Length: 213
Image 1: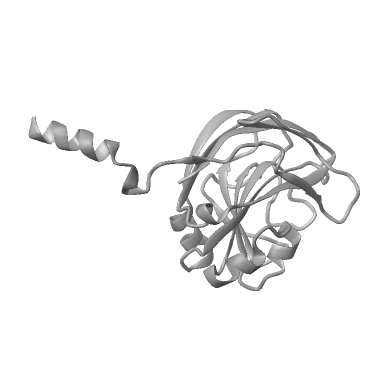
Image 2 (image 1 turned 30 degrees about the vertical axis):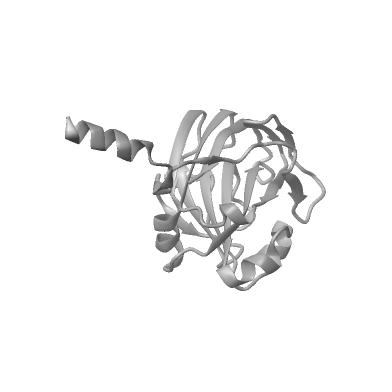
């Protein structure tokens, strides 16, 4: 009985750092295009983000609050109804993928100065690093890939190209060390992207129940 009571007490404790904080799709996410003029279609519906990418590419960005900067893990659900063909994610200009979820970190002493900034501005910061979880590509699941665009970006493949629905739970701290060889900094922003411009394909997908832990 004592063991059962102790287990129940531990499970009920809110101070253990395991409570998830939901990040809603509430209109606060803003689209940021790349150098070209075509962009994706995004619909923010509270718990869910709907995405259509039809030969297009762009990124939807949300700066985070101070209370969210120390997140060590994250979870979300995602669904791909229609997706692009497998690509080589290490090739610049040929790296289409169904969905990508970005977690952008900076050195803690730079977080306040960069708070609320655009993705483009923050990624110009020398200490900035983006850990990118991808559904797509022609690589093995779990592969960690250097970005062909910048040494500050690193991709982990969670799902290979294809359709379906899955839920993900990721350890940001462990994956960041594997990707960049250092402890993660302050989490200052999130982004979601779909990329179909290189293959001229079409993506119909969604991301939902995004939370930080």
